Amino acid sequence: MYSKEKSEILFSEKALFNIKVPYKLIETSQTDEKKPLIVYLHGFNDHIESFLKTCKPFLDRIEAYHLFIQAPYPLYDRSHKKKVEEWGRAWYLYDGDQEQFLNSLAKTSELIDEVLTTLENKVSVERLCVLGYSMGGYLAGYYALTRYHLVNDLIVAGARIKTEVLNENWGLIKDLQVLAIHGKGDNKVDYKPQRTEIVRLSKNGINANFKLINQKHIFNVAYIKEACDWLVEKGYSRNKYALKH
Image 1 (tube, rainbow, N blue to C red):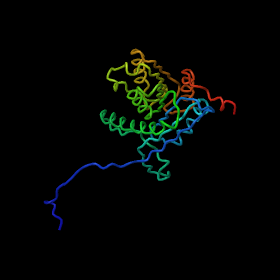
Image 2 (cartoon, rainbow, N blue to C red):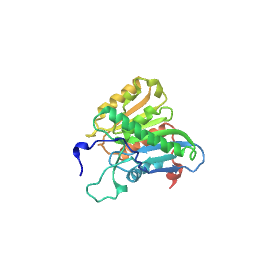
Image 3 (tube, rainbow, N blue to C red):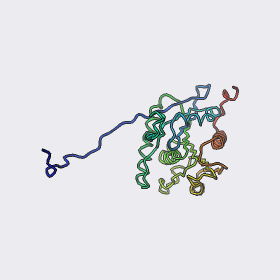
Image 4 (cartoon, rainbow, N blue to C red):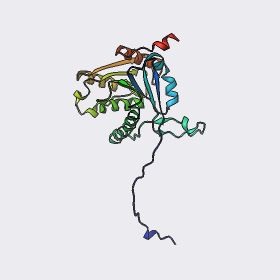
């Protein structure tokens, strides 16, 4: 018979559990020349297919490699109306603790590293842009500030760039170009902290711009227009083929 008094934990450890994360690479160009690579990071409770549809104007307008990655953490659908592949996803695990937050951002950044490494010999890239909305915006900012040797351009919508990860080492990102887009009516992520971050970046010699638009917390055509205009201004080529059709 089982004896409670004699029970003891003999071993306690963690096992590795892998989750396959889908990603899609789309090319919008008629040439074999080097071109930019834009990485798209969706918001909380979104997934790769719906965000790809949302971001179609980027494909129509900008000549580039467009890389869409799905966040790794599935969000259980209590309505039981969606298949697993349609469930929303999250980029990181956050419980209010900043150390946990940064550790989770670092872990998911390794996922982006892995995808980019896989594509290294398949595409010819001249510059890298990371674009993130909301939860994906926090990750985009973290990734750009910690992979400053890889990222040339950063677009963050509806989030805050956590410049504290630089530890005042502003020179590390001196060549990074930054656009922050925020909705004036955003009642989920206040625009003022992000505006403060852009001012801080600018004062430290970074080419950073803040664009406040009359929108709420939703990544729509208004956000996309601002981002596309900025990319063209920075030298990204218009998609001539799409403009003719």
